[in-house]
Length: 472
Image (tube, rainbow, N blue to C red; front, side, top):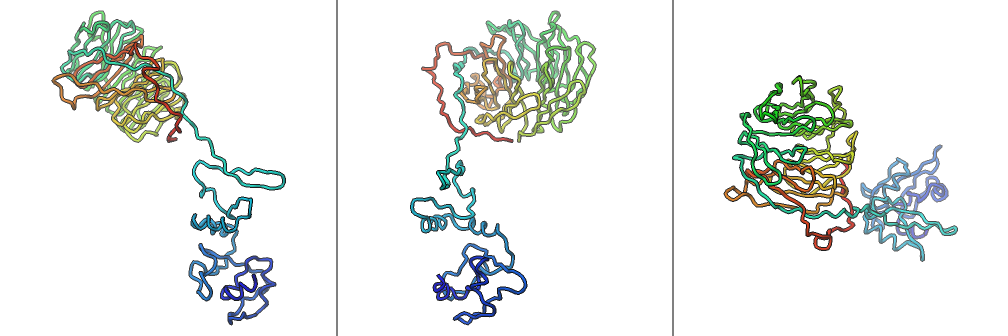
C-alpha cells in the first residue's frame, strides 16, 4: 500500500489516511520522490486534515487537486459523514459491491437513512456476537373495512317554487317540511304526499334559512333582507322580529335545550338572541368575512360557525368569545354538520370535507373526492354523511372510514338549464328513511334507500389501501 501511494499518488501523500499514524509516515521537512515537500507533522500542536467534496483523490496520478478536493484546516467528524452522503447512489452501490465481505452486508460509513427507500426503517438484529443491519418494511396504516350502506335512489320531485330553493327543514313530528326560496316565499309541504299545504310571505328578498322549533310551535326564518322572523304556526303570522344584523343573514339554528336563537350573517358576525324578549344576548365577532353556517349543541362548545374567511370557530356561549379557531381549511367553509350520536362534527369546503373531534376541534381525517363548492352537509345516526355541491353532485360517505360509497347527479327539472343543477341544502327526515334536497332547478328532490339492494348486488369496492390523511 505504501508503494502504491508513493508511485501513483505522490502529489497527495501529505494527506494522511488517519491521525494516529500521521507522525510516522511524514518525517519532518522530508521530500518525496516527486520533489514535493511534505508538511511538518509536529510543530507544537497536533494537526489533522479534512478532505471535502465527493472525490477524496484526483482521478489519476499527476492530476492536480481541484477546489472540491483541496485540503482545509477545519477538522470535523460530521464532514466525513456528509462526504459519504454526498456520494451518488450508483457510486455507493458500486463501492458496496466492491468492498462488501463475503456472506455479510455492507453499510457505507456515515450513510444516512434518507438514502433508503420510503417506508423502510433500519433494525439491528443480533445473532451471537455478529451484528447485521437489516431493513424491515414498516407496515403502512390501512383503511378499515367500511360499513355497508344501501344506495339511495330518487323517488319524488316536488315543484312549486319560482326561484332557487335555498333552505329546508323537517318539523319534529315528521308530518311536514318547510322550504325557503329565492322567490321570497316560505312553503310548507306534506312529507308523505309531497303536496303544498301553505305559503308564507313576508320576506322581501331570498330566504336563506328556516328551522322549526322542538320546544314551541314556532318557525324561524332569515334572509338576504337582513331580517330574522319568528312565525307562530297556529296563526301563520310573524310575531317577532330580531333586528341587529347589518347585512344578509345566511343561516340560523336553535339551541336544543334553552330558548336561544343563533344567526350568522354576511356582516362577519353571529348573533345570539333571546327567543322570547328579542334581545341580542351576544354578538360573536372575530370572523373576517361572511359567516356562512352556524350550529348549536347542548354540550360544550355550544356554538360552531363556519366562514368564508376559511376558518371554523368554536364559541363559549356564556362569555360570547372564541374558544378555538380551526384554520386547516384553505377555502371558504359553507357547511358544518354535527353527528347525532358521536361527539364529532364535519365541515365542508371546496378543498376537502374534514372531520373533527370535540371539544377542542382535534382533526380526525379528510374526506377527499368531492371536488366542488360544497354548500350543505347532513348526517344520520347510521353514519351516512351526505354532501351537496354547487354543480348538482351529491356524494354519500361512510362517516367512520370516510369511504365514498355513492355518487349522485340527478337530472335537472325539464325546462331548466343544465347549469341550474346545484344543491343548496339537504336534510334527513326524523325517521332518517328519506333524504330531501333543495336545488337550483326550483325543485325539492326526495330520495330513499333502495330496499332491494344487498351486499351481493351492491358490494363495497373496498381495498385495504394506504390511508392518505393530511395532518393539517
